[in-house]
Image 1 (cartoon, helix red, strand yellow):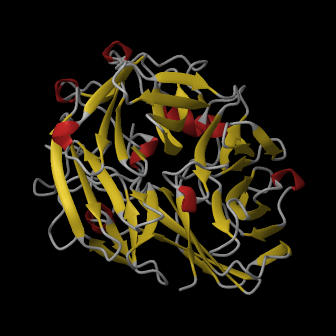
Image 2: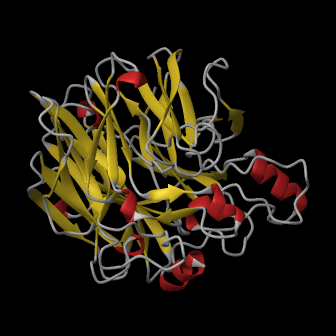
Length: 465
């Protein structure tokens, strides 16, 4: 019943019941003329209420803010997945959480995909992503749904919502968990070249079935974190939580050379923790360094017996993982860089997998539950030291901040941060534009919407082509 608890404590989780176009939005301040393109955001927005459904499984809704020559427009559309279409035709919910059909759903209905977590642009295609299904292709201007995209039938099964694009080669690297079916310990791994052609796709077994939300890619390595939000078909069959927090399983991270194969994975161990999101990672001689947002205990998921996790420990903090590749130890180091609660870390993506000097994340009020209280932005340097800290007025909340460079050849960090802000008193949202290296000055421009954009997950900027 966690979902109900979330809605009670926080007013911007509930879905909006409409699709809209707003061709001319009011701008406070001045939009930088170099910002020409579209910020696409994705998040859960259930078409129908499904009792007890987890926040993570609401139908995907895309929100597009188009900026051009100082003007701004907005459009939102549901992703018309097979699940959304079937429920739309039925006029009611047919699925509960994590692909579970409701008892009165038609027998031939099998696809509970929601495409609600991220939206990326690669090799000329705009793709809405979640973790349990293939990417869903979206038409950039209209946000119309074109259907699943399987790379000329060379990719199958689950596909992460957090693929990584190599800034040097343009290659997209991805994985999928539950690769041998729901709640199984198999993972897939693959790559798509810059032209959109699948170049590899293979499967391997992890130490246990885990919810693997994000992974780590450096110039020459891929790392797969297997952390103890565990999946269990036996639990699911008994009506217990399909995903639950089992810290006794410990934390594993598999390290593989990008030029190698999944047979070469070396497993490192550490104390139990959970990470939804990776800021960045890079190689430093015989070490790999990865900056992540680490929880001591997972939020939003109970223990196997249904008990909640400890809210004091269910908050993420900026943490550095270090892996020694010289073979001296199979343990990896975990070092917190700050005590501030935060989530949704981003960098200048031109430094993805390489040593970076700038990072940003949404920070939270530690007195309030984790995801319901993201109320500011932190700017950090390459060692996690705070360079800037901006807090919203009390009660307002913020989405993941997305970095947009000023130009292709601008220095790292020279550009803007775009973030959607919910104004609690007015119950509507703004798109806030910050100077990325001076967030303390507050937004340089605000694009004002007449309605709210519910709390969502991830977004990306696509420059005018």
